[in-house]
Every structure is written in C-alpha cells, then in structure tokens.
Image 1 (tube, rainbow over the protein chains, first blue to last red):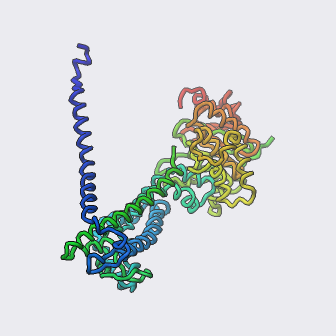
Image 2 (image 1 turned 135 degrees about the vertical axis):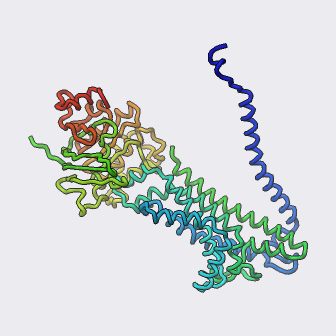
Length: 294
Length: 251
C-alpha cells in the first residue's frame, strides 16, 4: 500500500451514493410544486368545462347561473392593476433611487430601511383598513377604483422598492465613476447609466408585485369592492369589483352551478395573470439582452 | 528653459479616518508632457491621481487639505464645482469600464451630457482616431462595446474621455488588466496624445514609466520621495529608496 492509501479512506462509492440521494431529494422537492400546480389546473379546467365561453366573458353577473358573466370583474381587475402600477412603480423606483443614490448612510436611513422591510410583511387586510381610512374617508375618494388602486399600490410598494434597490445596487460602481469622470451630474448618472442597467432587475420586482396584487382580495374588502356590480367602471371614481372577489362571491352561493362558474372565473384570472407576466418577462428579456455584461 | 505647469499640487494631504494616505505632496505637472506616478501598492498613488479631478470626493470618509491649482485656480476652492473640474480633466480607470451601450454611444456620452453643439459623428470619429481605435471599429459603431476585447475597451474609454477635449488626461493603471500586446497599443496611443494634452499616468509597472513618461514621481508611504525627468531618475536616482525601487529591490 502506498502512504496515501494508508492514511486515507476515500469511500468514493459512499460519497457518490450520497450525491445521488441528494439529487433525488432536490428533484422531488420540485415535483411537489409542479404536481400541486398540475392537479389544481386540471381540477379547475374540468370544473369549469362547459361554462367558460364567450357568453361568460361578455356578460354581467346574474343570479341565474346560465346568464352569469365576469365582464365587470375583468374590467375592474385590469383597471385596478393600471392604477396600482401607475402609483407603485414610479413611487417605488423613485424611493429606491433616493435610498441608494442620494441618501447619506445614517441611523435614520437604516431606520427607514428596516421600516420598508417591515411594511412588506404587514398583513394585507391592514392595508385595506388603512385605505378605507385614508383614501375612502379622508381623501373622500369613496369606494372607488382609485381608492382600491392606491391601496393596492401601497401594499406592493415595499416589494417594488426593495427589488429596485437590489437592482440599483447591482449596477457596477465603475460605471458610475465613468459617468462622473465625464462631468456628469448625479441625476445624469442615475438617468443615463444607473437606470438603464438596473431596468431588467426592476422589472422582475414589478412582475412579482403586480402578480401579488392581482390575486389579493383582503385589502379590497374594506374598500368596498365586494358589492354586486352590474356596470363597467367608466371613471376611476366608479365602484368596482375584481376577479378574485367575484370568484369568492360565487363560491359562497348555495347552487352547485355557481361553483363551476367560480372555476371558470379562476381560469380567467389565471389567464390574465399569465398574460401580464409574459408581457413583463418579454420586456425584461428585451432590455436584459441590451445591457448584458460580458 | 522654464516649463509651464498645468497642475500644481501644494502640500496636499489626504486621510481616511485616522490614517494619513498622502502626507503633504508638492508636485508640478508640466504641459504637454507625460508624468508617471510610480510606487509600491498602497503608497497613495491612485489617491493622488483622484485628487486631481476631485474623483476623491466620491470616496466616503476621505478628508483633503492643501491645494491643487489647475491653471492657477485651486480646484478645492468652494467656488469650484467638481462637475466642471471633471469636464476639464478627463480620467481613464484601471479596469476598462465602457457603458453597456454601443461603441458610438460610449464616445458620444460625454459630449451629449455636456451639451455639445457641433457635429457629434465627426467628434466621435476624431476621438476614436486619437485613441487609435477608429480603423478597428469604424464598420461596427452600432455594436455593443462589450463585444470589444479588453484592450480595445480600454482604448474606447480613452476615446470617450478625449471626446470632451480635456486639457489633462489622468490614467489610473490603464494597462493593469491588459495583455502585453494590448498594453503596447495603449502605450503608443498615450505617447501620440501628448501633443494635444497633458497626461498623468499612475502605474505599478516601472518599465512602463520608463517607456512612456517624460517625468516620473516616486511615491512611498504617502510621501513624494523623488521627482524629475524620467531619463535622469532611471539612470542617476538621487535617493537611495528610488534606486532600490527601480532596480526591483522591493515593491
């Protein structure tokens, strides 16, 4: 035996076996998520079979299952997302730019930072109550789309801020230096160097934020989105409902047919979600290609 | 014959927290000459360079005292805006740092943000020619700068700085990330450029200083040990420490 063989017991077979075991553990962990999603999708599609048609998508809710439709909820969700995005994206990105590029490191700054992390963990119903107090009552916006959109915007704001901060932090310092050395001001550096490079990362956060917002019901219940709506909202100050609330409404009906209609509503919600996410991912990949580093 | 000095450094001190990095530097940078700043790692040569265009302002916790006179005006006077200083005094960094934009847009960046009124394409072409890169990139100006090799990227960064027609160009170890052939191209570029402007180059490569610099300043632990014409300093150094450093006994 060589001196090496005397001092070591490599047990390569045992180590390789462990490799294999862990590989399968990690793989099955993925399977859990995948299977749940598959079962869910199949069950929902089967339940909704026969109910998801043009009539369903273009009609208003009704107490007769065969006449019931989801049109106002689709409009409500799309409009709500637009208001949420218009509020949360600029505000969130601007806040992130301040925290990362302008603010001096201080105790006060870390206090703000901790608060933003905490805000991300607050239960969504609390935002609903906040929205009711501030937007519906104080600002007198009523139980409107605008109040709902702003409330939802507040809910997702911390996620937008934190992911935008991470994206800004990932921009190499050397690029900022290059801009400053060419006589750029702070804003020019942010606008022409930092933001273009951080955009793909910011879009990821926005996708996450809006995906969360589209499925939320709790913050909208205090705002008053639970009402039975027979009109399409025409202005931001009109009352509204959204897909998840409409779905919840239907599941609480006694008739069996409404459960199938709820399933059809879920399919519509998933479709809207997938559309929105694909659009965002498409945008992200487009910009990522442009700013990719070696 | 008396030389015209573009930058005069007077009793310049820089410290980070309690640590003094530059301990009273006095140095003149002469017009249309290449001045090399050499010294071992941590001697403060990069800090000194950064003081010349106020990039040192971006280093958190750095305290500066003394004067840096650019054509007679102290760039640390409260009346002077650092953005204006950097507009007049260009800089090229250790690692090539092109923007993730096209080759054209990289060179056009400085002129654009500073409101250039002339013909931008002509300016971009001229800058790329001065940096010795034009022939290699003239057919692919729209390509992303990251598609270039490291050496080409560094010459692009030089072109980018030249596009503002600065009077002084500062180079912070511009070849430390490059292979020997690329280094040679960059050195050629620098040598040609001194007709147009004044160059200060920080290098850890003694041979590079000997090859390109008219004047050399030797820095050790934050102090200027010796300054003079390169040819003289490399043949008859006045200080024992200079001799030890350039003969490779330490550093």
